[in-house]
Length: 501
Ligand code: NAP
Figure 1 (cartoon, rainbow, N blue to C red):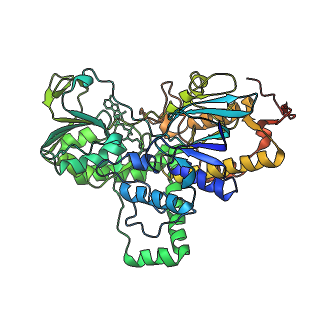
Figure 2 (figure 1 turned 45 degrees about the vertical axis):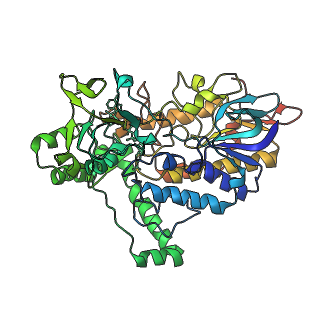
Figure 3 (figure 1 turned 60 degrees about the horizontal axis):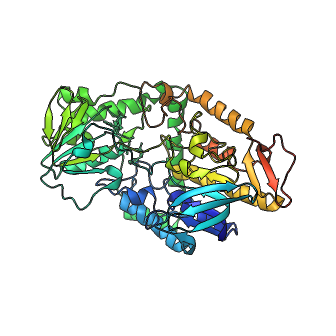
């Protein structure tokens, strides 16, 4: 059986960044397993028309791999995917990536102090550490609508766009008005015969302050790295200004609310349509979206916004609760992802024989520092519980976690630990503190439902503090928070708590 020191799951921003930083730290014995055929993760999977990032690329990129040639302040998906590929190609780590292979199951072997991992190609590996970068937005969620399986036309999810279907001149329905849908709708409105947009909850959409970089700026980015660093820093702090409005006092977000309401007024003249698309909850409760083209598209003759709930789908139409039947050729579901139950969690079995999904059944997703989990020695999760953001770059959070994992590995090597596992009480107090802070946030109290909350209303996805606080708290691995084991003979070192369940 093959043994690697570190097994990384996923080749998106997280997995690739992890591989690069492991290599830099001299930890060259690793393997990255990726179910897709190349690097890129979510930026490879989401190829729908109009896909682009709503965080400026100067910030939404690795700090260690600045890209002087971003064309726009908010880059389109192909440019981001190309950037990730370029970073991967020049990193020298791709020889340790295995593509088109999925992790079927990983189980911790306490006697051997190893992860035993079964892969979809039938092979089995062992690894000392298991580092998951499998992504918070990787598993599309299909809506459970009566009759949808009997629809005779084409149906696909926004994250699995079917490029073989030419939508020109077609009657199309889009279900959902989240970040994906509001990018798709203006593009489809240009080509389809008719588009019905099924809106359950109106989003707040502020103007997209986008522009092309000038030749001079690009020249400066290429030759004066400090200039690009200054742009990045300015964007970072600009974004961080949102945090108090999200986490302390929603009223502080009034400038954003004014922008959003102004965006509606500018894009839509019809009072009835304006009323339909005006949200009835606090801004920030759901992700704040950005677009200059969404409202004008809704106001066009091509698009109808339907707010009556969907009752069922027939072979060729969507039927709403008021009995109206709207015939269509193609159905596009932009209904989001499984976020509060990570799909990888049912594939990872810990020290007690329970899977991560079973362990989280009662509590919701919990971890220590969003990264390690009691009962799961040597498991590190990038983009783990409560590491998501509503306002800034996930790459910043990912890099903070990568640094923590690298330091954990360095500590394990230096001090001769075969495994590290967070104490239950340390993990509990970390999460109690997060949930206490969460009560004041607009995400929990802003009067909306969102993918941030699980079915018990717990916010297990977002980070409720400044991002620089997250970075500071993860700056150094903290062995005192962990039960540690030393190899052969297996003897727990004195710790605050044993490694019992
Ligand atoms: P999402 O934000 O979860 O939105 C899903 C939409 O589908 C919501 O409008 C939801 O309505 C609706 N919906 C779900 N089930 C439904 C049902 N059964 N019937 C009717 N409507 C239903 O998903 P997303 O738009 O794919 O975005 C997910 C996240 O991905 C974003 O928040 C963002 O973090 C990321 N993303 C980022 C970008 C970007 O950077 N530009 C682009 C796309 C996605 P309710 O609101 O009523 O639940």
